[in-house]
Image (cartoon, rainbow, N blue to C red; front, top):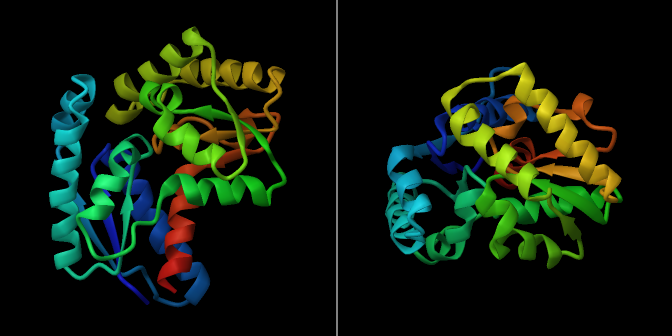
Length: 228
């Protein structure tokens, strides 16, 4: 088994899910006492969030690139950026290392297409929903991507940063997310991408009338497949 490198801590709440899923999926594949070989560099999310808010993406990319080099030096054979939003600097990180970067949006697009879905709703941080780096990557696979209206985007983003990244899961927020999902479905979404690694802490398949695509699980599954 190859060693999976993880850039985590953005937030650690979802990175803990990555670690759990990587090990569970490895055990499912190999049985017995098998677990995933992995190396984790967990950053201080407060530093990253400040750079995000200030639009200082180049500096954030430099920080993650340095972390990625340390993960490679520690023996990783492939790398995951354990957050959708920071795939904005994925090219910068990939250029800094000599091991493959397994892009989250590519793995997600493959899962969406395999389910026969072509028009998909996207939930995530405001950066992921409103900027081109993620939506265009999905569109490059032939997907039509729709996002919530301005009020919906503000709600989804606020819950991520003010609740889920702090480990707070509120029933009122789950109900609000269900409402946003319903609006996406009414707009023609045949499925919904949970395009922030924290969102799976709040909603799942039971909260949507159409298939949901949990990016943390999808990414972890693709990593295990690549590692094996």
